[in-house]
Length: 319
Image 1 (spheres, one colour):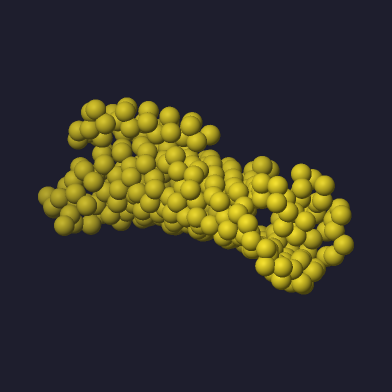
Image 2 (tube, one colour; image 1 turned 135 degrees about the vertical axis):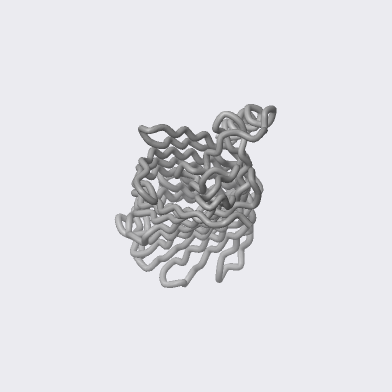
């Protein structure tokens, strides 16, 4: 998947870079979000207008049975009788998103967005030692992210994008049941990932009397950040903790939206798919034994989200 991500990014950049020149503004279309034609317009008083200030709100439902998988492997050395651990958690829940924009020049804009996953409960399956031991957890996932993108208007309805996303993701595991090979119910676990994700990509937009269409792809063939994985057994009689920084991975996101303008804004529908994988060698230790080793840790996450969008647009004098 990392190789696919790299190929996609390279093709997008090669397709866009040769002809960067002022073209038809496409930021008036919701979806990245929108913020009007970056080439500027004119108000009724003849004043040049910066079309910044548009807000786009999103409400969407996420569903993916493959969801998030977390894999830890000690390369054969057993810690607390575990050589490898595999968690699998479906990704589902309600996303709320909001985006805003600003004009930096006639051709360059800045877009900021934030998304928040409404808390909900689900279940997760955990396997130890290739399935020899297993159990099912109740889990409370938490996820939110913010990002900023610089947008450069290009030819033929294309826009070049570059920016950064901060992604906070955590899963809290509690009340294990259906335990095969475990003698106790008194365990808890949690995984926390902090991702600093560079974003590069492009967007294509088309507008007509029938409505507005936006398609975009962003991502990067690596991942920056860190992960902490903790698990307590039998009311903390024994603890396991692993921590480390990502040293490999990828992030890729595709987004599409169709919207229809009305009066001061628009309404629409959108779909989003993204895939994230982070790999690292985590420093692992156990208490009270004091054993230490290095775990190969992988966090893999896939999501689909579909929903609706709404926007309100207003103009301000160009500064």
